[in-house]
Amino acid sequence: MTELISINNLSVALQGKSILSSIDLSINAGDILGLVGPSGCGKTTLLNTIAGFIQQQQGQIHIAEMPAITAEHTLAPEHRNIGMIFQDYALFPHLTVEKNIGFGIDKLTNIEQQTRLAHLVELLELTELTPRFPHQLSGGQQQRVAIARALAPRPKLLLLDEPFSNIDARLRNELMLAMRSLLKKLNISAIFVTHNKDEVFTFADKIALMHQGKLLQVGSPTQVCQQPNSWQVADFLQLGSWLPVHMEKRSNNVNSYNTALGEFQAETTPSHTSPMQLLLRNQHIHLDENGEPNSSVTAIKLTEQGFQYQLASLDKKSPLAFENLHFYSNSILTLEQEISLTIKAHQPLTFVN
Image (cartoon, helix red, strand yellow):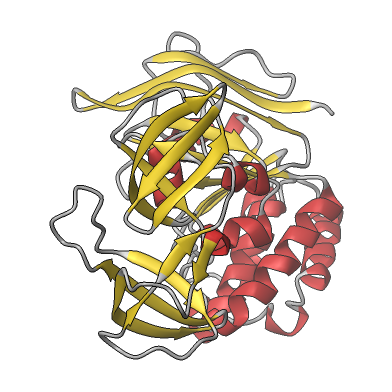
């Protein structure tokens, strides 16, 4: 596939403070990348640097066939062929929907402007809304106008800063699917910032997770969730519960993993030694109705997956004790009920935090 944007060793500092450090990232034409990470990790700064609103101190940004953008050879935002949709949509309140969409294509001929406007209005189902002003639109309608305005100049790359955060939860999934289909139809690449990992699975082809100004892992959402490369990645994506574990070597590559829920063995070659944290996924937890109790229910929540129970170990003095184990089950348990849990044999993922 054709590479649309390539970022190499990008670093950004604002007011003497390092915000982005040694960022390497590439996106193919037509791909959609979800940029996730905790607040303040540099996601929006990265978008603004790619767009040209913030100047880099180091590294290169390559966009399609354009010359490399560096600290010494920069390029104004209007010459980068990038569209951007802000979190609040930033529509012009004094302009109608039609005028908002046509704002960035005023240098085209009238015929070209009308052709593009008609195409986008029909595509985004805005035909009846063109004479209205932004204050007369719902949040979802404003978002569609912002999308149309960003797409009118036909950018190669679209940047979106939490584009779905202001949308009603009932409409969010429908809008994400519609927008993904539109971007694919127009073969436009996109990078969008989100705090919601569920949005990445619906909207993105790839996920990039940031932490303290650095990119920790990039890959398909499924790949990253199945094989997180660090504690920070697994913890942010909430891929399971954390359980203290002590590993003992047995024979060859077979190791024994001791936890407050018992022991299990696996053929592994971990790169670190005890003490460690085991990433325990729900499918590896077994409720033993006849076993000796080792956990108690501390909280109960009803979810689409059934009952979600928060558990704590009964032995509070053990170095392997835990206080925040999440377990989904259709079994009906009661608050403070003591139960027996065991861990099914599996290939463990362990980290040092």
